[in-house]
Length: 576
Image 1 (cartoon, one colour):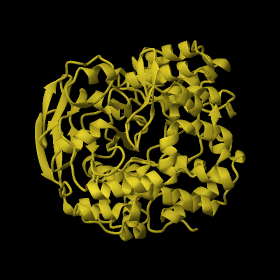
Image 2 (cartoon, helix red, strand yellow):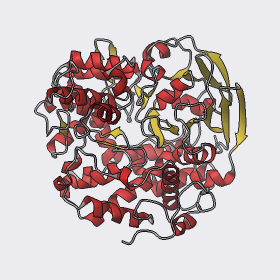
Image 3 (cartoon, helix red, strand yellow):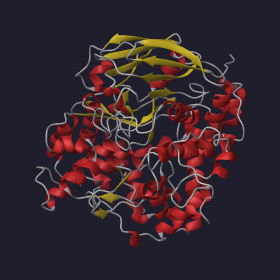
């Protein structure tokens, strides 16, 4: 069975309750593909500078790619919006049954673009290429209860999203999967949108090509690693290589890694997420039911909170999932409170190794209880600004760092600082190589970070499974050709998308000071001169010393013509 690439966008205005499908300009599809890239093009076109992320003027896109539902591995979707946590561009991703069903429900549409705000809690039901707005009966329920009360595959918010916690997630598949960092769930809450329900059968096409790539992935080192352990092994890797931040970033390395790492997860697992050669994560039982702990669970809620009790760590992870809260940001919020209390700055009633105190504080954050809960609901950086302690938990662009410690990998320091959505280890993860043959020179650091950022920009515009994407030949050109999707040089496409998002962010006022090392990281702890390396990065990108794209770079990438008068652009890039 053949399949042609979708070429429309389903637009829903919750204020007017209008629903329409519009054709996506062919030039946009060719230059930005879908997912991250197409979402960035819509956001740059439709949002005014300074738009309130929690206002009706913000847009939220559930974006697929031209080959969604066809690639091997988990189908994924991108939640694209302006972040209420950082004020910058945001794209977050989740896999599982919801995006698979959404790929069938959307028909000829590449995504669902939601604007406006409803005057009562609603849900969107997507099927047969259109959507309808219905009253949401599950407002006030957690993410698991909402999913279980709904007929169809569901992406929804929990109490944290309803309270507009700045790092609330969009949860799917009974909270096994989350579009996590940056607060897309808070945007849903501000729009009074409780859930999106997808009722469609996933596309069935390109079976031979899919099986060929699935076999390639099974034989690849990444595929073998995923089948054996998956991301739950990252805490063991980080601890062994000296890059695991622990006890609220006060130390590197954690004596309890064996108790919460891959061995403990395998021992407790009752099954894998999926049958077959691409099995997904490990499912374990908790006091609340079942959970699929991933790498960030053990790293942030285990090592980060000095908890070596596997059951306690898994239950905290399940709590974050049900609340619809990013567990990296939530864990760092608890760690900040524990360290600030330990140092006598506040009295938070929580300490390291205290799962019950952590549970109570996370619930207070989700409900925005007056005082510390409300402060931490806006993020660690905001709480520290209000109460002191900016040097406790590191953050970039107000997003707290995941537990890969850049003091053990200068390349990760640059990756965090220059990430387009704030401190993110997924835009570039050079630590996985530098840990074995580092420290690297500044030139190698810059080259590795730039290459990873551009490559992932393409993968996330296809919206490919992060790990299966490692074996895509020619950045996925064969797949695009198979569905008749026009495209140019995909290497240039990745660079174009990265620069477009930089235009969005500099229009919002972001510049070099926002690409800085956090106060908690001493530049003397890095193997390279960070400021000089950052300037090299800008020069490699064709940007100015302040991180502003140059006219020559934008012209080469076919972006100069779309840069509006409110977007800073410079005549000459930084000198190498």
